[in-house]
Length: 343
Ligand code: AMP
Ligand code: TRP
Image (cartoon, rainbow, N blue to C red; front, side, top):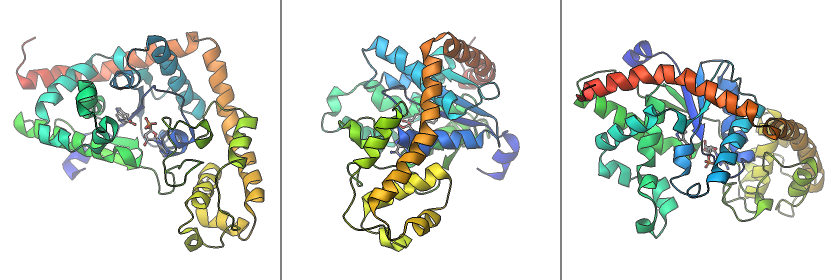
């Protein structure tokens, strides 16, 4: 952010996750845990991006989508987001996101959107069969952030390119409409290295909700026995644990389990390596399972409590939407005026 930006725009955090499938350990260590930490430093807004969800797998499954919106909101709260201070809401409730996204569809150039690697990955070989929404997804994401003039966006590494696009859109709008500094150039807040959580079955693949094997991931809703079993069965190599960071080279599964241990216990990796140097995986896995169960089962328990009766979650989401609308409405009004719309 330029100096003038830092002065002109108040610090505000915005982030979101799609309500598609159950959240897993990667979402927790790579995103949620960071959201909870940053809320002590800056005001935050946390969104359940349900309009993004219908660009692909959330399309055409209304009951599943509704259930998933509540579940993701419950995960935010159970992980520790203080919704009384930092609003939680679902995107489709605040129409300003869609209005600004349309304007941004007209600001962004085809060439910019064509470069998005996530679209290429998700569309695969059959670009003509995916929804138009999947293609314009990054413009909606830019609108999510900028409709609040948010300055900081905690996301995983994979979202960095979308955030750069959001900065390009903000800059082009400010220039084309002769409104210097109208939109801030939002910055990514990327979690420290080592919080990219890999699959428990393959250290070269990201832990992901789309992996067909449930044994590859720890879901935030898994019970103690399931967590312990998944860790016990996690792929490893036959050697004992190394005694230095260098010893992790070429051992992606060992590295992943050590990273998970370090992140869950908030300890530096070197510390964990020091403690388990030369030990067998069986011993390390027992300690990791105990740690994961201790950290994750309270989250699962709180999610179950919140989801048992949706009244509380629904009230929290509605209240959040009302609070954020008060921020978004003047911004969209002023944006439309700058564009030249009447009314
Ligand atoms: P997704 O599950 O892809 O919708 O991502 C939601 C958020 O979780 C994003 O900020 C991702 O960067 C983060 N995330 C997803 N999977 C992982 C993973 N395996 N390791 C670390 N962060 C992840
Ligand atoms: N694209 C993000 C993801 O898949 C989700 C998202 C949508 C988002 N809008 C956002 C993240 C705005 C941060 C800010 O993870």
